[in-house]
Image 1 (cartoon, helix red, strand yellow):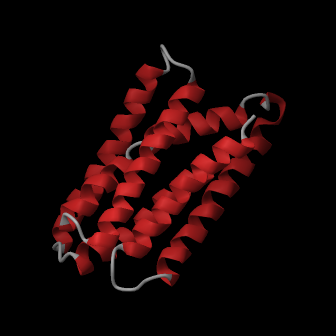
Image 2 (cartoon, rainbow, N blue to C red; image 1 turned 120 degrees about the horizontal axis):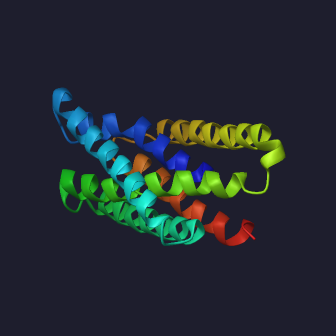
Length: 172
């Protein structure tokens, strides 16, 4: 969950430069691109609500994480090759960010499970992890800035892939 949040912060930190400066999207149109990802996030959270009626949260979390990591990988390929121009970045970015509406609530529920008597502490630790990793990811996008989409895309793919690795190695 913390690494997924970090990926979202990398998107928030890098997307204005990528869309407005790199691709020349007018500032007044940037909000539409940003808003479409917010709609994807909200839509995924609504799908999550329905999926939870018939599927275990852990399975939904796992699937959402793989979708986000796969889309982030396509995003990195587009950033490296320039394939598809603006839409080569915008479309996989949508599919990397939207699953956070599935990942975040299920990761939070999983992290909180079994800590009912310490729910406040567990929630605080989860918040610290999410926002600290988000700050690191935002700083990484800035530090790696080279005038291309690659810093944002690279940090997003590192975060999403890191989430998969953490899930496979740390979750029992």
